[in-house]
Image (cartoon, rainbow, N blue to C red; front, side, top):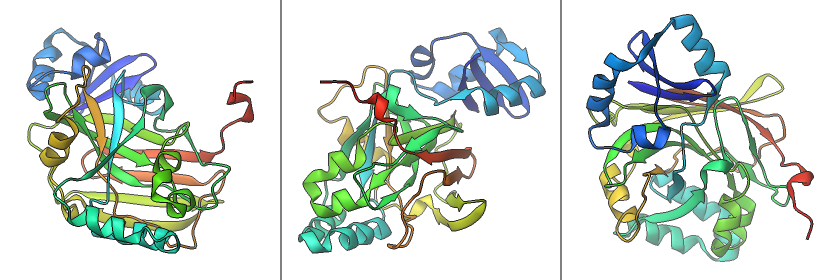
Length: 289
């Protein structure tokens, strides 16, 4: 099943059928056995035509998030470790990434509050003070307030590699800024855990021409979903649940950096696709001191 949060309400897709769910997003998703609950909710939901639902889910769609925080895991794939080492070799921080990849404890960091998250079809931003910016396509987990993984979505963990490479302590500035995260297009709620053989795909287009493409199996991740969720929830409460991006393995070449108006398309087998356009934040967003 797929849940779309749209400007006209929450749309539930099951097979080729669509329903309008009249509930608050946080209340709807934050429960154990979400798949079973959605099955039972169909009886009281309003059916939608395929045409109306398709229009809402493409043109009226919002990121599938209510008041949840977004967190992220780093260096969960071998290629990610190697990329971090490459970007930080001049600063002397390369050894840290070897250590965190091999360590028992994963790297976890705060990524975004809900109001800064972009959705499918919306802009994500690159920093003006960074010379090396990349998208990071990731599987994102929805974890309920009890720490149980109940759904999945596509994540884009935008990263300013020149800033993180300068000093690992600059990670918050490299990762956390306006519209540095995207989630979408839906929350995928299967009856069984997502198959690790499913693939993450990413393509980047510039001026209508593809300049990067790649795919990777989710199963190449070193950490398990329950392991990452367990560490995140050890000393933290998330009352409405939480989203956790699980890391990336698709890293463009070192001579590549995003430009304004680039088009990033990320898809995950079984979930769908999310498209974002690259831009800069408006200077008008900065409040006068």
